[in-house]
Image (cartoon, rainbow, N blue to C red; front, side, top):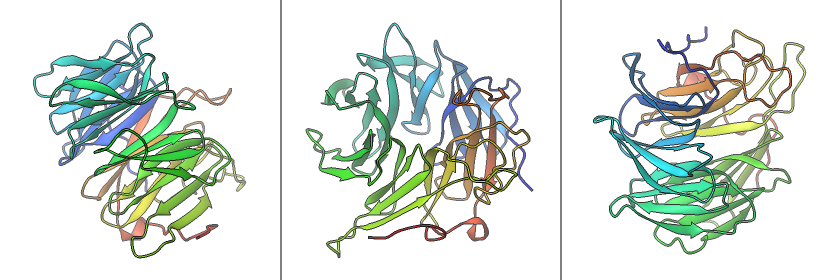
Length: 329
């Protein structure tokens, strides 16, 4: 049976843009479009904090256990913001020339990285609170980015760029995703040099660098959920997470009907028009959290309130990436 959704006394009333687990605890950070940043303790099933914002929240991340970073969709000032979860003090870090859309934090270098509709990637050093331009005049807006260790992987259009956070003047690698369509999400592999990307047409590409070989390992496969009529739907892959314990990935697409055919960890949703969006993996690998909400991508979407599900992860509900249609170079 599917686990029931998390309970909120004040329900989340608009689409969820991001959910992230804290680095060392069961605390879950949630950034929705209803202008309130939420901190939820999954272990005790309690909402620890609800902090109002001036605008919809497009992304969020933890700096550490006590500080959260987020980017609101303000149309008059394009701020990147920080919130102390203990003192409940808010401050502004800096701003873009247009709305910031992505945010990530590197504990190794104490850098906050943001990207926006101004086609710029900015780096903010929290030790000096000084920001500087990492990259500008990009070909397009950054669709997604992922930080792991000293590497940052950025998706722009159908291309992937890898940066070394110690030398941000230019990408250390430029990768062809082998997709001729737009990339929606990118996720770094926490236990290896590599990444996975998801596209708008349901394809997932996985690339792993092998120091002992001149050839990288590459997989590509499709993720097409079935409806009750057992027909496949072309679906966008909106988020990807790697389990740090099982060396396997979890991925989620949006879809029109049941989630039961997508993966054994996805819930059987109680409504017929919900969309799997962001999800996060607990640092110890035992829990997978999935958010579902409408996305305004279909004319006939039912605007049900968003839901957040928590699933226990183990060997009995993991699938190998080699199952189904895949290729390896």
